[in-house]
Image (cartoon, rainbow over the protein chains, first blue to last red):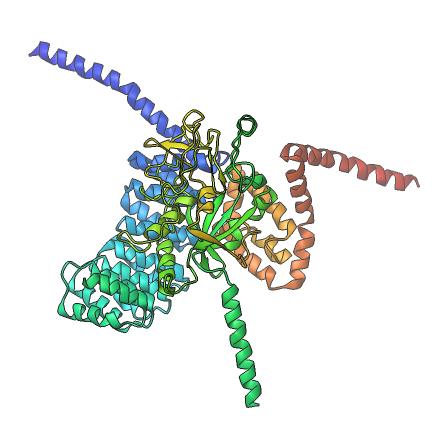
Length: 251
Length: 379
């Protein structure tokens, strides 16, 4: 028994010694990547590659340096956007990452494209925790913010997100945003979304919105009699694009 | 009265129609060269082909491409990812200064025919392009057309056109094998590249993007000289140049500003608040000097970054106040003169020489004042 214990201990010690350089080297590599990511004297390209590598590392410890980069106002939009993507890719610690993304989004000094990126990646992260922020963004004065918020809400595939989109879809004045809301709603296929899309197809004034409604209804595996009837009525739509699309769907 | 009202209405309608006819259509593809007018070769429209060219010309500019979405806005893939910005930022002023040249805008064939390209279809194209905003740039050119969710500038435009209608729909702006060549290395209006592209990814490998279908070509010396990029036994070139030459698109008039901007909106709408307020424009040459100091020196030092962080946090309200008071604007402009002088010297001579000159000035100024006073006393 004693001999076995000694042997076991020896194996463990040897294995540890063999593995140590590997771990030490991995840590050194990661530290090296962090220093490149943070080094403002390096080219944007090298830094973006390093930031992306940090996001792909899966090591939760790198979230601190990434958040520092994201929150640093003297960084360029390109670098900060890369940090958003890396943090979303890293994924953990989720709470801290979402908090940082929301904080930067709410900062009045944050540029538009960085805001769009944050909204998109909240969607990719399926951040139901950020539903209040995304819902609020649907009322933003910048139509592109509303567009990206709608896109993100669609990715959540969450009942509350759908309800919010349906309620805003009726009132948003920008057809491009309404069309995106239609696409977002259509990603979740249930009787409620089908009814909302059917109503849009029947009543929206803008051909682009009706067109997208037809596309999304066409993706449903089975259609209710109301939805089918709306699609059949759309065969006489004033827009040739809608007529052609509906014809294809009904075939 | 009624007649004049009617005439006036007609004039307005005619002007509106004329105006709408002139405006660059959304969905137009914009192209520009790299510095010194290069776009994959000698000039915008010629590729190096002789052995002399191969030996002499080792540098190849790849150019850039963007999608115009109307209202003087573009969507393009740049190092920071897919962005939406003012069309003036297609060729920022700094790039213009380096010899970047606008090549032109192109639209698909029959783009003016509503039976082929209805208003809804064009809107759908823009909708799809807007969905790509925020996605990353394919910095190692491995998945240029968004296979991995990232894009190059050319790949983005191609992807948007090919996929905006979903389910295999869309419009192929660069059909595969479009330029088969004629065995001499030349086709209708194109001279094929005869030198190795020199276009490496970040690992210094001449890698090839997956499933890229930008112009496939043939040339007797293609394999010997490693022309373009080899993929699946075929040869390709896929920079804006090849996209520009496709006959699936036609040239259209550009009547919107496509150059002279300051770069990304994100990096400039908030910069140099105080100086911009004082000089009245972010394009003022003095503001440009401050911007250069920021980008070249302040951003690259820890102290500079601390200053910038504090500056961007606290200066906007101050700038707004200055902008609202003309007398204060003049006072600030005068107050900024010494700082402008130092900034100008820093940009022109570098921080080392500037610091030395300032140190000498500080050393000799008291001596100079002392001598002046002594001289007056003696007089």
